[in-house]
Amino acid sequence: MINKKINVLDRLKQDSFKKKESPVKQNIESKEFEITVIEKDFLPDNEVLFNYDDIQDLEMKNDLLKYESLLNLAKSNYHTKAGEILNEANEKYANHKNGTFSIWLEHMKIGKKSAERLINRFKFIKNNCLTSEDQFYFETLPLSLTYEISAPNANKDLINAVLNKQIKTRKEYIILKNTLKNESPKVSEFDSIEKLFNKLNSNISTLIENKVESSTLDSNKAKTVYEKIELLNKEIKSLLIEIEKLN
Picture 1: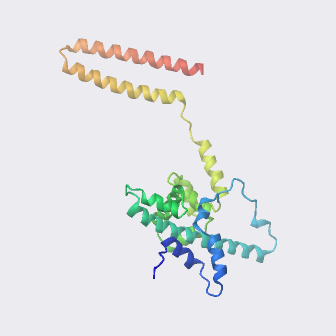
Picture 2: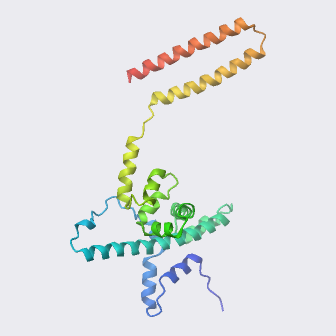
Picture 3: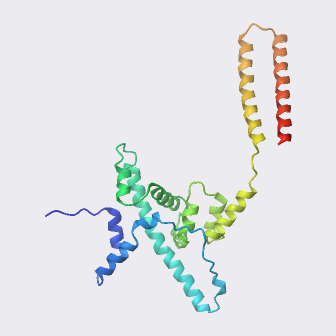
């Protein structure tokens, strides 16, 4: 008798949706919640405008808030476990040169970027959610928000704001992120040229200094060489400023 091999992620999905009384329904739900959902765009461009404060019925408002947290927790736990499994597989086999790991990801219908995001999210929890309370709070956040703050290039101030419960939705996060981006000082083209010039000038000065020291020039001639270099530097810098004014 041939034993059919079941990979770890399939086992996870089967266990997550196991219902003894309704095996047919379990298969349907399992298919609906396959790992391929990660490939879909769960970060919509236009978010639905829904405000809990608009709900007059207090019981309904509290219930819906509770249900949202429970749904976020259910989805989040699944992604966290998937990230943990992929992280282990990645550490063990991603560096193998035969490309088996990448092919296996394709077999599992998981894109490389999706795998990276899942792994980054798991690592974020491991490094930033040091208590069970911290992790529980993280898992109750909207899934899209958890992926935003677990990105390697995420702003540290915004990460802290989320973990300190100051930001609770992806929409709030994106607004603040764009605000910070607009407030960041932009480096002008002139500043870039000036930095490049200063670096080049420093290298040239060091090179000439070494040449002079190893040559037979006396101190007066060496001083003359340095003065000429300094004059040329000032002239070049002056020309760069004139060019900047024309733009």
